[in-house]
Amino acid sequence: MSFSSTLAAHRFGYGLSPEISPPKSVNAMMRALRGRDRAAKQFALPPVSDVHALTEEFRQLQRARRKAQKAGRDDGPEYAAFEAFKKASRPEISRWKAQGVLRRVWSEDGLRERLVDFWADHFAARGKKYVFRANEAHYAETEIRPYISGKFADLLEAAVLHPMMLHFLDQNASVGPNSPFAQQRSKHERGLNENLAREILELHTLGVGGAYEQIDVRQLAKLLTGVLANFDIALRFEPRRAEPGAETVLGRSYGGAERAKLEDVQAVLRDLAVHPDTAAHLAQKMAVHFVADAPDTDLVASMKAAYVDTDGDLSAMTEAMLRHPAAWQVARRNFKQPMTFLCSALRGLAVPVARLEALQGGGLQRYVGAPLRTMGQPLGKPLGPDGFSETDGHWLSPQGLAARLQWSLSAPVDLARPLPDPRRFVLDVLGEDVPKEVLFAAKAAESRREGVALVLMSPAFQRM
Image (cartoon, rainbow, N blue to C red; front, side, top):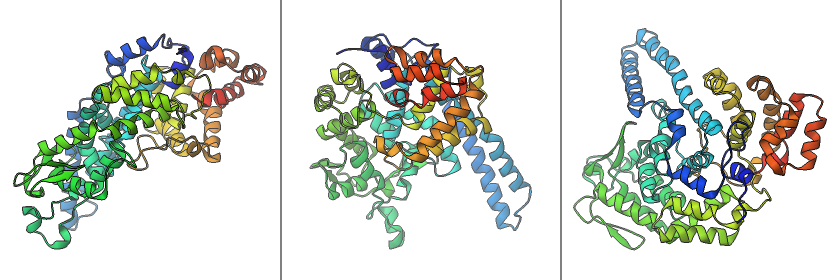
């Protein structure tokens, strides 16, 4: 293994910064990951109870508005109060998103931030209604971030049984066909929804091509009946909605009582978490994300072995990746996703915390939200349950590249006042292995604006 601080910052973090020292060793990276979460404390989100209080107020105002509408009052004080609340709450929700950007830009533990993004994308879920959109930042904060260096079983259970995921995959619509609840409804209302079960097997654990069949999807879906979200607040298990009897998933029986219990659901998730196909799927996906679209097979095998040997310890799998020689090949094969590009640029420019904190509402939309959407990666809005694409070809589109160029020419001028000298900037963000042609271009630029943009758009900066 040939460790490189520059590669460590680019490949396993959000890039170099003139204000923050890069990692010194794999040991240092792992100590930071297993240690205190300093960025979460420095750029804190409010407690989740504050979010639930906000969404409860929304529901109360919404109920009042609907009651007024039924009474024939479409433009009364109830409507005005409802609209005023939504307008007043947007800056606070925007601030929560800005905290996530600040963590990526100013954290001393870039690996942690990249892992949070990786696992949040693995368990992609977005809010389809206001109350769940308000919870998006806290979903990653409470159900992803605390588990990225622990057992995958804990992460799996926390993510897939969270109200955000249950809402996103329509689990509340799933009812056991033979449950007491279903017997009191007409036939067309007795639906078994397989969305959550299918994504657990296909995306979250075994992966496409894993050792499961359609019958396993259906059996797992039946086992999951009874699981539903109590609004956006908490998981609830309703026995009357659960399918009676035992269900068999991958040859193993779960349940068996008159109705399933939440413990049966937790048991199948724990078993899926330590399945060899899950180990292979997660190792391959992580290697693709961090190292290359076609990662070294021995690297993937080492990561899988570390996972299997530790019963799904994510810290062990991460460390196996970092200690493998293939992780430190000089050639940068992965093209940065838009969020990684934008935050690594802000980090390299050392845009002050106060300036980034001021990016709320319109400012966040102008410099972060709108550019990311044009580049193809809307902030906090995965396009589907499979998250964002890991393949370079997906991001190398004319529209995406044009958006990166436009941002590189316009945003630094406004955010990094004064703009850095390109001759210094190129060394700050590319380190000791800066290509000669990029160094020459930075020195020959006619203006600081053009020089900074040339560096940001160079293949050396765009790839990890």
